[in-house]
Structures are given as structure tokens and as C-alpha cells.
Image (cartoon, rainbow, N blue to C red; front, top):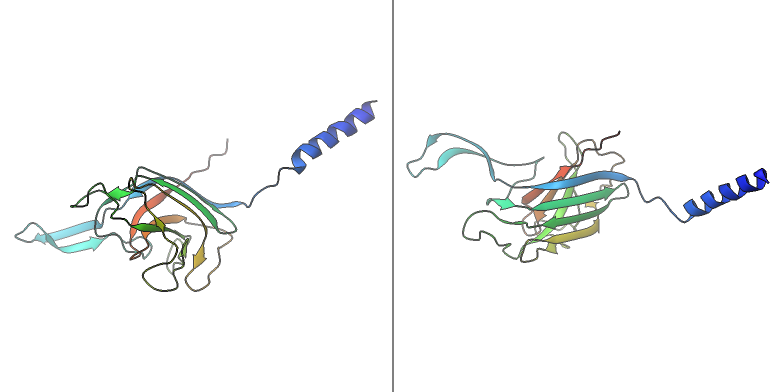
Length: 191
């Protein structure tokens, strides 16, 4: 009787787990977003009109920034080891200038960079092989919301690495490749 109960318990556990298949392992996760500030620093001398001659643009891992401020209300992204990327962004809008609070009808792509130092490999959610204007960008809703569900690919056929030592996720304009927002890497806490 005890033997039969043990066998039935084992079969029940095996049956319950047989229908659950583990998906691909996560390569990187992001929870939260940062909008771009185009200038990372400036130095004297100041011009008579209040501008500065010496300005450093806010490049991230070799990717140039937008020339205007952008804000993002929220961003969540998961990148699987097989290169599948799912991004949900809310409120990606101009944060300055005459287009304040709008999207200018832009389309965006996601780019993952895993290297901590150059040379950097850009893996994007759109076809970046044809130069500056990329095929496959996702249009921003009027309120700045967007969703990306694609597979990452490199400009020269690079593949997704097995590890991502320094995950950087950039949301970029499909029109000119400038970054508008960045993902905040999730910190895993083992308790």
C-alpha cells in the first residue's frame, strides 16, 4: 500500500511538471527607464549668449544621444538567451523644446549591448544593416507608449552572446539611431 502511494505521488508530481516547459533562460532584465539628457558636461568659457564652446555629448557605449531631452515614465524589458526581446515602455516623450510632451511621430527600436568596454556589439530589434533609417521600428503611441516583441540581430550577423557582463539597453530612434531612453538593469537578490 505504501509502495503504491509513493508511486502514485511520484507519477502525480511528474505529470504536473511534464506540461510545464522551461522557456529560454534570461540573458538580461530591465525594470525602469532613464530619459536622455543630451549633454553630459560643459566647460568654460561661456559665450555671450549663455552657451558654451566646450560641450560633451552624452554618448553611451559609442551610441550618440538625441539632441533634445526625452523622458520615460516606465520601462520593463526581458531578453532571453535565444535573443528574443520583449520591451514595454510608457510615456516616452520630448521633455523640452517646442515639441514638449509629444513624440514627433517617431518609431523606436531596442538595442542591447553586453560588453563593458569597446569594441561594442550592438544587437537591435530592427534591421540595422541598411544604414541610418532602420526597418522594423515600432511607432510611439501619441502618449509615448510602445511595445517591442522581436529577436535581436547584429548589423554584421553577430549572434547573441551566452553571457551579458554589462547589460545596456537603449531605446533609439529608428530614423537616426540616436538613443532616447535607457533601461535600468534589474538586480537579482537571492534570499
